[in-house]
Each structure stands twice: as C-alpha cells, then as structure tokens.
Image (cartoon, rainbow, N blue to C red; front, top):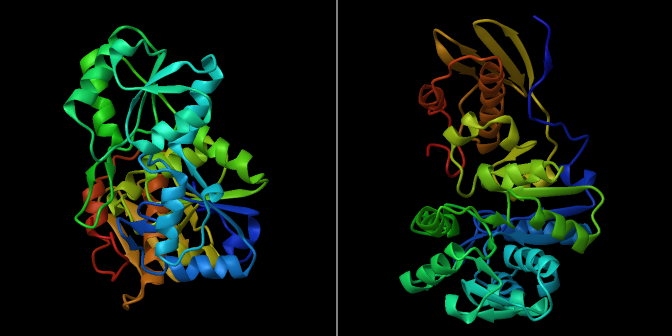
Length: 359
C-alpha cells in the first residue's frame, strides 16, 4: 500500500509560530474560560511577545467592547489593548455600514459591545421595532430578554435586513457549556422563518476584518471549536490550530468533515511553540492505516479503531494518538466507509490526555 499525506493535517518546518507573521487567537475556551485564564495561556502569550510575534484576539462574543475585553485580559496578566481585539460586533457593524446610509437606525438586540460598534460606524442604535429601524443586528447578551427577542421578531417579519454577529450554539463557562448567541438567533429564525446574514465565524467577515486590521500576510488562527473556528479558518483561506481546552470534544474531531478539519492540533496554546508533523495514511479496503510520531492507527470496518502506542501519562503522546486516529478515521470516511464514531472514541480511552479528551 502506498502512503500519502493525511487529509486535513499539515506539517510545519519548525516551531509553528515561526511560519506565520500574525497569530489570531480566539478567546473563550482558548485564552480564558469565564474569569480564569486557560492553564498555560499566560506563559505562552508572554513567550510569543518576547519573540516579537504579532498577536491579535478575535472573538465571536459580541457582548463586551474591545476595551472591556482588553481590560479583562490585562487582569489575567495578559498584555492587550483595545486595538488588538477584533469582535464579531465590529464585523457586523462593518456589514451594516456598507449597506445603510449614515445615521440609519439599527435595532440592536444585544449588549453594549454591539451598540458601541454600531455607533462607531456612524449608525444609530434603537431598541424597538416601532422605531423605524433600517436593519436588525443580533448579538449575545447575558441580560437578553423575551421582550428583546420579540422586538427582533416583529422587525424581521416586517422585512428589514437581519444580521447575526455569530451563531455559536454554546459558549464555554466554568460550569460547562451555556447557551450561546446561536441558540437565540434560532429562536428568531424559527419564529419568523427568516435566515440572518452572519458576520462572525465561520462566515469570513470577522477573520477578513482581523487580517485587514493586522496587515497579516501569513496568518494562523487558533480556536477551540470546529464548527466556527476551524470552519472559519478554512473559509478564510488560512490554516487553523485546534486546541483541546474549550468546546469541541474528541468525537467532534473524529467526525469533522473536510470543511472544518484543523491543519494542526495541540493540547493548548503551547502547541504554537512546537513542530507539527502530519501523519501518513494508506488504504486497502476495508482497512485504513495512519502513522505518526511513535503512533500507528488503523480503522477496520470489522474491528473498528485500533491505535498502537505506549500509554504513559503524557499529554503530547495523547495528542499524537488523537491526530493519528483522526487521520485513519477521516481517510475511511472520505472513502465512503460507515464509521461508528462512538466506537472510535471509546478506543482512545486508555490514553491519559488533555482536558476535554473524553467528552
């Protein structure tokens, strides 16, 4: 059987960060979860700054202003300024400004971060469907109420354009996943039968705004969600590093279609400072094999997933196991095999692994 490069994965010629002029970082689940920094994030970001790496923070969360986000990062001993933060609220406001006349009224369903972004592009935030809005923009707010959703539904039913800052169905919290903006966007969509235009990931507008802001020529995007972060990176034409500190679980990674597969995988942000090697794959139906650094994986239609490697308590080995397992499973799926993903996930349970491995 001849070997080929594994579908989706890429190889770096040295430390990953050395191949990119700008690193764009998601926040929730990557840099922090709620009020706490993700373990190791502070140290890695400090090392990136020491090396002179240009870092910008890119978030689908539209509830806080860039100044508030920068202040929160600073409170975690992570250097940041408002200019280094790009939000989906800003991306949504840019879309609105491109289509509406100056000072046009916009019904804002969301928090102050979204209202500030709307004002910053010369538009006028309003609160009700009877205020003659020219558009509706919807973003996350912890104080979102039924009354706010109802106003959005009334305006959207009247036919005004509707933009959602993002459609993340959940957001990470210290107590586990909580409803995200996508859950509330779905309420309006189901009530009205309308579909919003989306500014945030995986739509390209947010990452395009970040690239324009930073002047990036070889950007790398780092995220924790496959459906928004990695899909967004692919849609924007840039490689994505998926970290295991946030939302997407092992079974999600095994199940990832071509449009949401990461180029690189790491336990956490420290993976930016490491080399990455794509596994090699070979196929001889009904068996698909993959090999990486000290790890060999195989998906067999009859026997399921088998991975051979020593099982010490080492998170990096566990990441390599997952990378190789994904390579074998993805090759099988791409070749039309009927893969039992829960069975595949169960086969990985013997390895000590990073946070989120067994979800």
